Image (cartoon, helix red, strand yellow):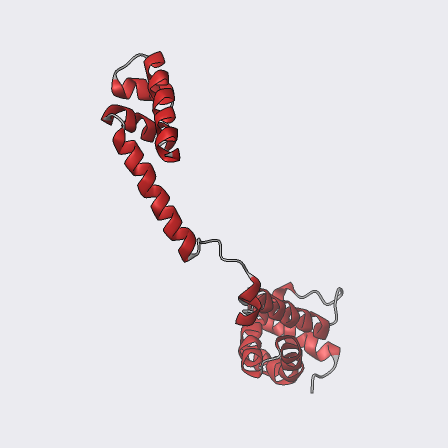
Length: 181
């Protein structure tokens, strides 16, 4: 029931002038064909019905953009429907994969044994740091946990730069001895 190309062109021209009767007639003549386009692309009846309504809103708003010498009216209408449906497909969230496929994905977190060992290592390191003088332990933490430079640590502890270097070197030697014991 689409009618001839000249009839649909005439209806689009009248829709561009905001003729509601022409819009109703255009819908009656072309909605079945455009619904078929939507259904074929979206593969979901409810989504295709909703898309068809949105498409006709676009047609109402953009009928003045149709140029009869460039496209046949049905080709233009199908292009509007097709582009709208493709936009809907692009906007869909990707479907999730089966959970069984995720079995092979490695978990980057430590397993319970590794976590227990790390906790034990952490306790040993803390114990060895506590064995250092308070200022020197703070300097080691500042250098290796906070990323502070020698200059920043020297200012923080109000000591000369070379003294800070010596503190860190000697403290690291004491830590290595303590941890290897």
